[in-house]
Each structure stands twice: as C-alpha cells, then as structure tokens.
Length: 101
Image (cartoon, rainbow, N blue to C red):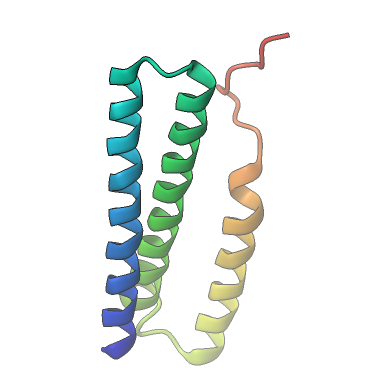
C-alpha cells in the first residue's frame, strides 16, 4: 500500500508539472511566441503525458493483470512487457505520416 501511495504522489507531481507546461503553452500562444518555442513545449508536455501513461499502465499490470499469477510466470511476463514497452513503441506505424523533405 505504501508503494501505491508513493506512486500516486509521483504521478500527481508529474501531472502538476505537465499542467504548468500547458499553462505556459497557453501564455506563449497569447504572447505570439515563435512556432519552434511552442513546438518544443508541446513535445515536452506530450513526453510527460507519455511517461505518466506508462506509469499508470505499469500499475495496472502489477495490480490487476499479474496479481494472481505464480511468481515465475509473473516475472516472465513482466520482463516481456518491459521489452515491449522499451522497443515496441518505437516501431514505425503503418499510418504514420512521412516526414516532409
């Protein structure tokens, strides 16, 4: 239970940081800042959300999906999921737009 409270505190901290980034993006738009600055901040906010999503997914897998499995099976699945999260999400998407030349 303590770990879940620590995880929740970390998630809330990340979300507050993202919230601040989004407020900053809003302010930048109002001030007419250059597109490159806006894009940099948008990418930072998106990256933050991606990290929060991964932490929530990890919590779900630990507490809901793998909770009742034998230890050996659980460890094997955790390792496979770690590899998939690390390498699977970087694979090119079939419907991904091509970069401009």
